[in-house]
Amino acid sequence: MLNRRTLLGTLFALPFLSRLGFAVSSAAEEPLAFEVGENLSYTLSWQFIHAGRSTLEVLPDEVLNGEKVRSFRMTIQSAKVLDAFYKVRDNITALAKYDISRSLGYSKIQREGRIKRDITVDFDWKSQNARYTESIAGDSHIIPVAENTLDPLSAIFYIRNQKLEVGTVIKGPLTDGLKCSEAHIRVMERDWIKVNGVKYDAFKLVPDLNNVSGMFEKSKDAPVEFWVTADHRHIPVLFKSKVKIGSFKVELINQK
Image (cartoon, rainbow, N blue to C red; front, side):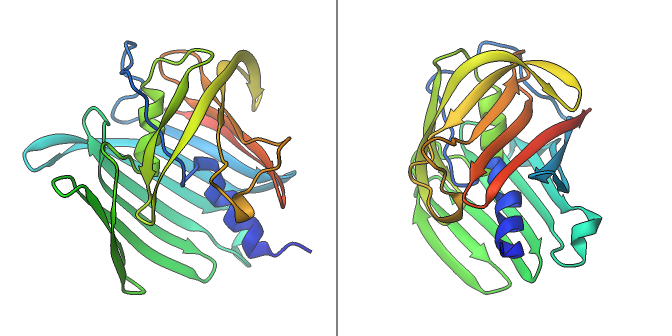
């Protein structure tokens, strides 16, 4: 029988590829993919079980050291039916340079069952390192980061603002404060897909997860796959995969 903590932890962690790096060599020529006020809502499911919801938001711009910067937020919430035995309430925020070329700050308030973490990652680009702090446990350390490293949340918006074509390879460094790693994402194909009764002209993207192991590990014949709309907004509409403990989906249900 599956351990419910392992199952739900995987489900809520995997959809947004929190250990992968996103970067691309050339900037997009398309109009900006998003604007302040955008709010995307998703359902999370494992097999045929509704497990929760998530939102992805573009917050009002902020000013940091006299410069205007981007601000993003993601929330993850378990369904009421699951709250009694594994309640999830995660809130993730990020700051990035206005062109999203590098991260400036990242935080995660994590409430998953008995797990409680308050994480912040502060970037020092003069010394090119990142300081990870978990205030509840009192853990703090510094790691070196590659030039123009992104945090997991900012990376989602960076990739959306690129010019995507079949065969495009997106690659580069990313950190959540624990380590700085690099991965590749390839645009595999373009096709029409149906998500929650709505048809989308979408690109299929497949990340290279060779450096990911444990419960994140995929089998050779079951890659992680996700789809973004083929217009200039590149809205993530579907994310799915089979992993060691089953299959899951993250599906767009509403956009504002």
